[in-house]
Image (cartoon, rainbow, N blue to C red; front, side, top):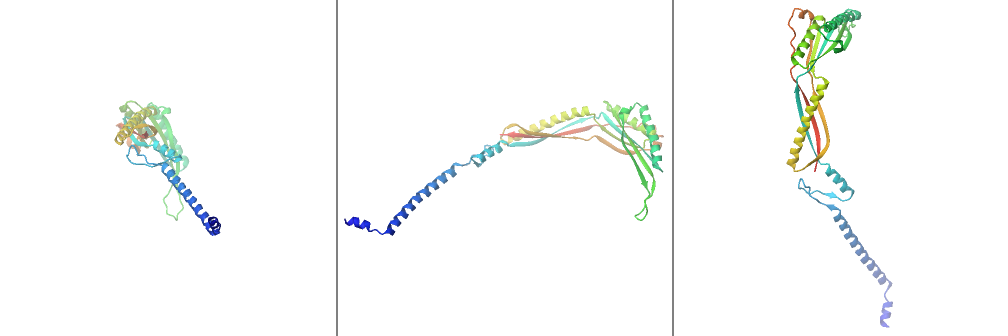
Length: 291
């Protein structure tokens, strides 16, 4: 009887306190559980493998990020370049001959130029140069003005006409090519041409063969360099990612010279021309995949 009375007499504030303590205890357990779960998740998503080539620890994230990292790692590569060069004796000469005339009127300049250039073409035909090997590569007509300062009115003193032909000569024999080029120059100047330029090159069919040979050398050089690098780094080449090439081909050009037929008429010696030797260079840039 006494116990029941004491229990019944516990104040309401004490009962409330018991409830609060119970709630706090359950919350503490819940928070502790959540904390342990969070730590476990964090530890399971972080990996630290070792790079097999550099011997360094690397960090990868699991999930989509890990897949992206793996794709990037698989694209490891070595980029190298190689060069190939071939030398050759030109089999083609390009002779440019021009007739430059001056007249007091445009009509005078053009008509006198036409007469002179026709004589040049006839003379070239006479030494066996067919019209299929001759083409016009330039024609110009412009007015000549007297010198004056800013206060005077420009005054035309005459007109200048320039008509240019290009003669294509091919020969597999270098000495013969030089003789033919010299003969074309002498013949054209004697007939009225007063400006000459010369360059040597190679026919397209031969250029293709030369470029193929130089490119093969360049690729072989790049391959050798890549394997040397891979061996030094302790990696293996697994394939080619990309490749590109560039060609350097510069035909030798002998410039432009003004020659006067009057001076040549007293010179009976043929103009000596020596084709010489030229070269072609090809570079190859290759990116190799490695693992």
